[in-house]
Length: 560
Image 1 (tube, rainbow, N blue to C red):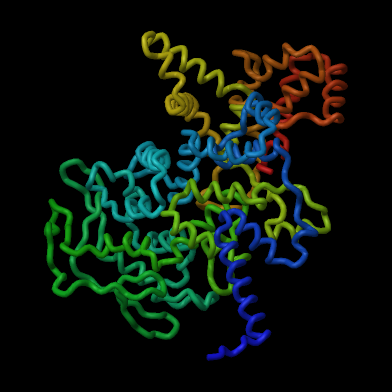
Image 2: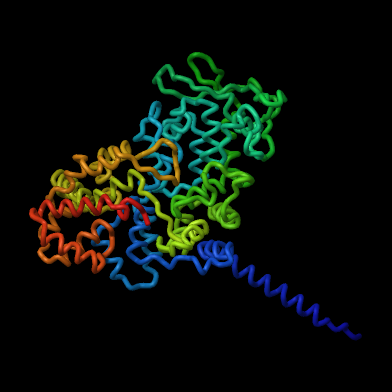
């Protein structure tokens, strides 16, 4: 029996298929950070021509400290990093900072602003809520678990009462919550779809608004008569009906996530209670629509949930979201790089919503590690394509901690805490003072009031944002505020005290620039420092003025 010969065309087609399949498999096996860079590079035919080079070690060292632990590094840490000649030192540093207790504090600040937009604490104390967030990030709690806890909390369980702040400190205003749940967890602002389909965004429908609203509409704020605490009660019945003010068309909906199917109530669930509602008892129905909200939010088929959070994490690290504004994603405002957003959303699911894993992947990208300097004629194109490091203003908390780090106020406060512990616990105190968690908590407790002052002066009320605006009051706070002035006074081996002891101009300039700007001075800057101190009348006052000038500079204020 003879076999038919395979034609050359068939052989070529088979070889081509195998080559493309092999290439696709190889691409999928690349680390996620490399796949991100490949997608960014492929999005523009001239990407290589305008992409900025890699940032210097000193730029990276400062940038990654600000983004992962919320403050600049010390001069000692910078010197050690610059002297390290190992090829893996950047990845090693990323891993170390993600495991640092200061990272959990940084995430506490970031997610507090994202979830609560700096709202005043009315029913759940700030300290309890922030500790809940910090402990969650210390444990590297998956994002879907954290969201499920927040959206399921009713304030009655003491263990999860802090998580209920999202509901309780909005006074369970159902309309406000409907909007904020869409914005914060789904990346869509449905406020203008409450009375009618959105007039400007075709894909924001009234049924979307009321689909989220239906999860909440049966619940209500209840005051526990025993402890006077606000909690959530819920009725077992109540449908959501709505009418468009434009068309007068009426409809109704069960709970739903945007365009996903409605979630009907189980049969015979109406008027079924575990606890019937009355003046003394909050209602607890057998079937809770509100408890279904968290489950529906984190369900695998709700890809909008994942798209939203990876876009927000991207904005935290890269300075601007793939979708901007962060809460206005729709077909007419698509992501700048759709393939990148879909890759991140899918990989976040596959890695069990691990925020640390995602932050590491973003930090390892060339996009994150690019210099903030690009040729002027290419800058706009490079910025749009994440081919240059984007300037990011420090948050109020970052600014406070960075100034205290630069001036030595943080070191002085920690030394005081250590001395007090050694005195009160001479037997075991020395061991406790070396523990990173104790050191972070002790320093935070000592300096929290200072950080709060910066938050009052520099914080907005808009939640997470990538925009920036400075005010005259903020400038005056830095120029004339007694807090910063006090940190500039020599004492306790702080920065100005160390600079006073430097008699050689080059060493003085080196200590000054490494401590404040986290880099070594240029030749021109050394010459400027030398000339300044040759002519200044009062050397001690001159040192304070020079430190203040660097702290007030745009280079210090921004993460670049």
